[in-house]
Image (tube, rainbow, N blue to C red):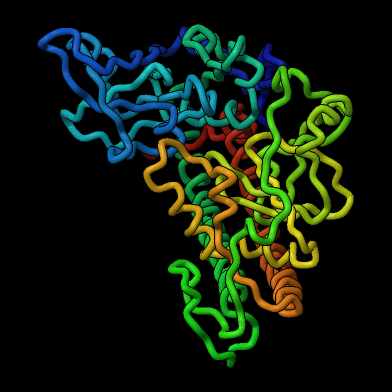
Length: 442
């Protein structure tokens, strides 16, 4: 017999089983915001304790080696000390991302900063965790946050989040079921991640080997004179980027920043659009033609090499293909070569270990991650005869296309599994999967 269902009264939740309720978090749980950063003690009795940040939540577990410390009063430490079964929810950053607290040892004192809210649930906290996971994945919080300047999921907003409320035994049965199902999916996702990692390293190694050693494995070798490049074929040379380029420069942020973006116009490339595999334009933005004209000095041309020069993606690069009309911001550097015929080879050279290690070396001792134009110009790349450069570039196009196709297949499998995981959680926490007759095992 089909399970009797009723309207939940909340459109995005839909129908739920009869006997279930819809409650607000504050009606069935305690929600607490963490403590503002306090780098100095305020009294002699304050304690220096490790604490969780939004960054730590995104790690998916409590990694003690990455925790920072700050000062807590005795009362604050008592109130904000985490215990197993708590659910932390990111207040900023990955807004609404939950973490189920587990693995804390007896007497261990770990607290949390005001970049996180803690939910302390009186019933089965793992059910709560899965509920918070589902609404995070569904994008619920994106429409439910304070976003005057930077988005935040405040304690007050979190407290009124609705939650399905099954009988306690069914909460436990659902949590047990989802523990088992998500563990199986997560194991498959982990296997796919390992395969992707192997392929990614193969891609890098293939590029490096061809770029620095060539395609003729019998060629006599010599020392290049550059520690990072190592030995190269005896008839090859090395050159600085500045010696083979006519332009090394980047764009700027238009006056008004993101407020000047328009629905249609000239593509405006940012670092998130530049990848070693090529330009990714899913989230590209546009500027008006008048703004592009004002910034005409940073218009890109076919065959230009684009290099990310700031942040976590520093050194990521690709070549500008045919059919792209665009400008760039200050986080993307344009390298325009004297001889466009060798652009594909030089673009691949930028991705080789030899060049990436030079980029990493340039960052040693720097106050912040960033490459300036002088550093880019001083990067050494190998310079075989032009016909060899063309042959190597063609070979790498073929090899990387094969690897990229395998990576794309793995990405599709990952996406299918993630959607399956999300669907299973949704079906369970809203009662579409009937576990009312299951005896909880915990």
